[in-house]
Image (cartoon, rainbow, N blue to C red; front, side, top):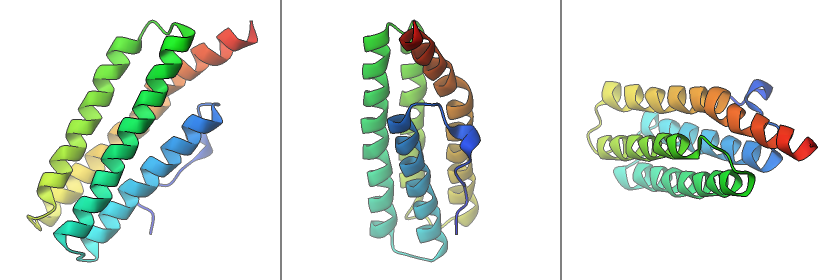
Length: 135
């Protein structure tokens, strides 16, 4: 069951970044499903560690694009990335608690953050890069 479905509206027009976003969404969905299905702490933490590591990789790829194209908002964007990684850490801390409400609320917060980040911040830099490449 998908809790956060990919929509074409999320596409930023850079296929590698869209692929990364799809993977991040899939891992977040997988962590919620594992939690709701009562998988053990180790399994849930493993999925969240994969999400954390993949997110770090994805953000590093975005930051390379920023440098290559001289994106002026890179510093603020990077701070947002740090916030997301901290939120994943908060979710990992809740894995052993079995507090359904807290885990699900935090996961929903991650989903909302990711959706808003893609639609606003990522679309902003992608538009900048695409326009720059057309010149």
